[in-house]
Amino acid sequence: MESERTWGVTPVPDRLRTLSLGDLTLLWGNLGISLLVLVAGTYLAGLGLQRGLLAIVVGAVLGCALLGFAGYIGAERRVPAMVLMREPLGRRGSYAPTVLNVVQNIGWATFELIVIAAAANALADRIFGFRERWVWVLVFGAVTLALALAGPITFVRKYVRRFAVWAVAASVGYLTWWALDGASTGELWNADPAGGLTFWQGVDLTVAMAASWLPLAADYTRFARRPRHAFWGTAAGYFVPLVWLYGLGLLLFLSRGTSDTTALLTSVAAGGIASALALVALTVDETDEPFANVYSAALSLQNVVPEAPQRLLILGVGGLAIAGALVIDLARYQSFLFLLGSFFVPLFGVLAADFLYGSRNPVQIRWSGIAAWLAGVALYQWIQPTGPAWWVDAVERVPGAGLFTGGASLPSFALAFVLFAALRYAHAPTRRRRARLAGSR
Image (cartoon, rainbow, N blue to C red; front, top):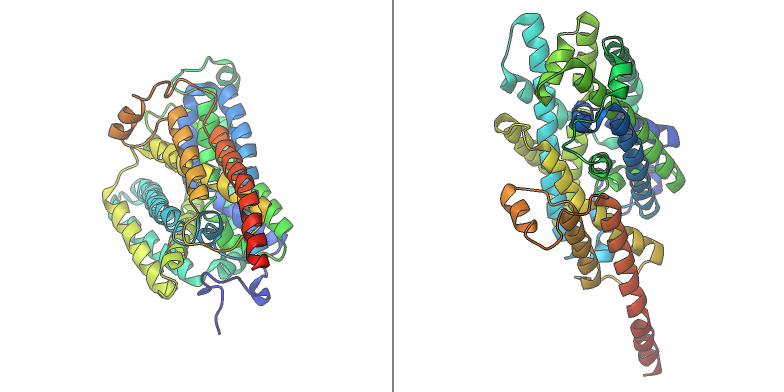
């Protein structure tokens, strides 16, 4: 009998729709509690504590609302995220975001393993004088593969409920106290921003963290009992840890005076036995992040090759992530976040418009959806050029590129949504005329 461990691209049957509101809240809360989110918060240090926290809250509200809606659509239609894209983009048209999603999931899994290995290495060095990062990449890579092979329902019921969420909540609570105890919060609160990042770029950076899950949300919420449970469990579950850990990362960076992001983890490890134990719990729990990325990458590949065994795809994707973690560093992580947002925020705008408009007959390529998506990506890049240096240089030559500082996420989402809705509306009379002609013959 098939289970959630192997269920692929067809709608999930009722017998497997077992995740409750509590399950989904715990799942997304656990996915949100991440060392990578903690590290990402350090990039907002240039805004200062006041403006940085405000940017985090605004970005989390916007990003989690989008994420919750993505979860709702997945629960309503009961299929994986990349299969959802077959309606607005066409079956073959959905292959383009599928490839991007596989690449971004492998990238996220790689970066997660890098951060996990860095934290474990810092702890091992402090406690045992042992520094071999590659060992920790292999160890936690193996744990990631085991979780991905188990499947999402098993992951929630046997891992998150019984251990992860409680140990991690206690650890984050202690680290928050440790950060506040060693910080001159009054001085930091009143300190002037250092610059280098605008407020709306900070909002975009927070939105991008939530937006990175948009092409994954349905992979898990398709197992939800009810769509409304999927929305609230996803949105609220991810909102709390996103704000908490972004803010904690910002505070730790400002108060501890670390000169780079990796040094933040070393600083926590050096904070005493309790902070080291808290980092141990976070490090062990961090494996839920690469688990989700590896599982979703394999599931996305099934949109293209549905006959491929899911377990074999998981092993292949996991192997690529482990290999990447052995040779890649974290230096270009901020650019990576912005680049992800430029593709997936407008893509979700197209999906949202299609969902609200209703289903249509399947096609191989729906050019209206692809055009609206690419227009949203182009607007995002025009507002916030991001990516490899050669690409940024090319985009910045476009007149007006980078001059608007109001943020790129919402405008790109709105453009893709409105443009696709307008194209569907304009095409509706043509479809009706064709239907009438076909009926009169």
